[in-house]
Image 1 (tube, helix red, strand yellow):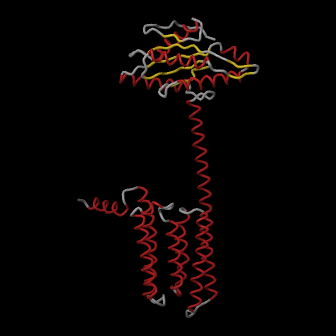
Image 2 (cartoon, one colour; image 1 turned 180 degrees about the vertical axis):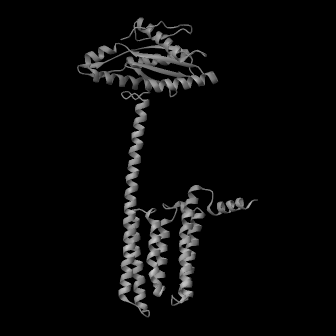
Image 3 (cartoon, one colour; image 1 turned 90 degrees about the vertical axis):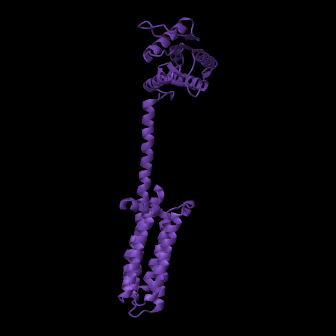
Amino acid sequence: MSTPSRWRRCIDWILTTDRHQRVRLAMASLAALLMVCCIVLMNGLALAGVVPDHGPVLWWTLFCTAGLVIVFVLIRSGWSRRLRDPSLTQAQILYAIACNAVAYAIAGPARGITPPILAVTLMFGIFGLSTRQMLGVLLYGLAVFGIASAVVAWRGEPGYSPALTVAYLAMIAVVLLSGTFLTTRVQSTREHLRRQKHELSKALAHISSIATRDELTGLLNRRSMLELMELEHRRSLRNGRALVLAQLDIDHFKPINDTHGHATGDRALQAFATTVSASMRDTDVLARWGGEEFVLMLVDTRLDDARALIDRVRQAVAALEIPVVGGALRMTVSAGLAQHVPGDTLEHTLERADQALYTAKALGRNRVALAPASQRPAAGISART
């Protein structure tokens, strides 16, 4: 096995192959690396004699290392997944601040290194904590560093300067306040971007709906229906499934607009679309073809079954009542059906269905007519009302 492959397997074993777990463990490892650097620095200063007593530094080193191991194990084992924060971000930051405060208390003249380390620690919280959580970190940090300063004052180290301690505390407060402010700004920016993304998604969905749906009835528009019919046409060629197309036209629709107004006509179209949709099967597709004309596509359906379904639709439309001033508006529908013939074009099948619809209109309307398989429509069919 090659060295790179062995190294990759080692990394996968440490960080797992789960994408989310790898991110959590990678961030925990980065925080641990920062803590290790602090541990090395503190022990180096203790060995150099800058930190007065090496004993507390050793205990502090053990305390910090144990925390790092515990956090990594909790994340690596998957135990932390049951928590709201599986990355243990807040717990890691609180623990790091506690370690930083202890270092401040035992570092002696070298305690000036702790505020910069605190600032780096808070950087992990800016992107991982909410503003409310960061406010808690602020109060917690002020409390533990206040206790650490009290311990320093109580111990009375040689050369202890109250003014310097106050300056350190002020610097620590500035660092904590800055971290909280930055977190607030980051969260505000995130929320703004989240709202923009949501609004953009809604706008795109609306645009997509406009492009594919009829605005009045919510049905597929003509272009989308043609695309869907072409898809079903190709499927029928592959698997031999039957395909029936039906042209539906509301009888005498123009007088409805002329008598009751276009608003009532719009309500009639919407009621018609709702009624027909409720009478269809889940596999059937209805589209508004234009004006008061509609096209219904029935997949994997025999012509006799299609006729029975369309007849149920016709009866449901005939029973429909639309409230208008002075009573109720009723309407009927005529339909023409055509079985798609393998090897024929969709355009020809639609023309045959249209010719059958013309026949249904000519026979008195409010009826269903079938197009013979060999029937070809005449050019220039007259407009229907």
